[in-house]
Amino acid sequence: MRRLGSLVAPAKRCQTPRVAGPCSRPVRIAIVDPEGRERSVTLKNGDVGPVTVGRAPENDIQLISPYISRRHAQIWPHDDGVYFEDLDSTSGSYMGGARVDSAVLGPGRTLHLGSPDGLPLTVEDLRAKAPASKPTRTEVLRVADIQESLYLTGKETSPNVTTGRRRTAREQRIEERLRALITLTGQLLEVRDLNTLADAVLERVFELLPVDRGMILIGGDDGLEPRVWGVQGQLGRSQPTLLGPLGLDAAEGQAAPFKKPELPFVPISTVTNRVFEEGVGLLSLDATSDERLEGSKSVVLQAVRSIMAAPISSAKRVYGVLYVDTHRSLRKEDEDALDWLVAAGRQAGMVLDNITLLEQQRTMMESMMRGLAASVDARDGMTAGHSARVAHYCVGTAQQLGMSVDEQYTIYYAGLLHDYGKIGVDDAVLKKPARLTPEEYKHIQLHPKFTFDILSKIDFPPHLENLPLMAASHHERWDGLGYPWGLAGEEIPVEGRIMAIADVYDSLTRKRHYRDPMPLDEVLTHLEEGRDTRFDPRVLDAFFAYHEQELAMREQRRRLKRQRHSSDSQLRAASEPTHAGLPAATLLSDSELAAVPGDSGAPDEELTTVRVDGRQGGEA
Image (cartoon, rainbow, N blue to C red; front, top):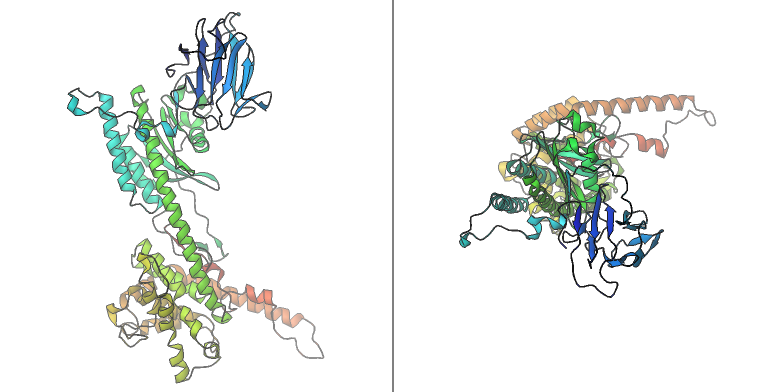
């Protein structure tokens, strides 16, 4: 039996199995599809069946639903109506709430496909009085199964030009779109982040399809979130390419909420939600006449006429939705555009599998690095949080220098690990509450070399292969008088030159065993005095710019908070009772001490998370 071109088609004649003979009483088999439309086939006198039902296009009744198998069931003529046989479908067929493998259905009997309350299948006796006519639904919405896209299956291709037959306009269009899909697939092979992926897909959509607007939506904790959109080919995105290095609100120590983007248009949620939840492609040639969209105010307010949407998915999961629409009605001839959109969404989904895997690997590597940094911090509570702060200052300075996102992540990692070599320094020297002797100073000067030796034993990925040298060069000087190698000028990796400034700044602005924090203006003066001798002048200018934009206000808030906490502690101590006539000591409990930022030894709460290009690292 051929695939139905309309809602009703006659059954074909074929060899009848042992179930029953030719149809002796005309019956109508009707199934209500997920769209609420009635799909039906008529068995007339003499027809032998079977009528096939399933998700694949070759079935007599095609039902696009994740709960319907490709070949779900078949139906034969029977003296009492029809004989229904389930073809070992995954989700099953049900009568009265119980799963059945087969059943005889007389006129008026109902069976459900896919679940006990799934798609209803009923049988009508055509000899009985015809029921009152029901209002017909407009056939304007096409549902596409991902597995059946002609661009993915290759079931339909352009003819060989050597045959001499002139290609039709449709064949030429399919060939053009197939070439575009191949080009897009090659382009996506090099993509390593979601924004680049979304840009590439949407740009190709605007080049190829007759649409006005498009959007990439990705599933998140709050549902589908817009990531990239375009109107008349002009693209926008939900987040800037580079975010600040600190993704936290310094005053509260909480993640700074990102403002929801101002979208140039709103996609039709009725369509996007179904595509995302069921993993099917949808096409509405005339949204204003589509009964499935009659409750959508957005269709009317935005003057939307035609809509297409496809899942961004792989064999593993549905990641999001590729949505496009237009203010003019698409033609029936444009239906194969949905097949192309579905194919593009599948290619993007497979690339997202790789991006997700890379992100998981990156997260694992970052957690390892933070663990290594924490192991050094654990040796000395006074300097805990130093490596995390230095890493953040490095990212901020790198952004001022215009370094790429990958370079910013590299220097972030190097900053986390720059003092790891201190694990080889004696505790007596590391925690000495006084100035170091020359011998002790020589001993502690070994820690950058220890850092290099230890990190060199780690098999970093190619883009991080120079990380040991970067991390170990933070005590090199611009004039060549630094250690451990005495590098000078451009010989020092730029990451090491950045880290040298960040390391000194954090050391001077925080309490140490042998001194209190230096006033901020004196710290900045000290850094300026190192220009052209200790520090690269270009990098120093970048740090000062970052400090003016980010750090100055943060440091001011931190110091005010510390002063308030100190005043509160003194008042509390004065009001407490004394023992044996002695004045009460100004001491804080362990929990109170941990709550004091910076000088308490605990890492500053506003510096525990890094954001670069929308990606967020965890606590350091």
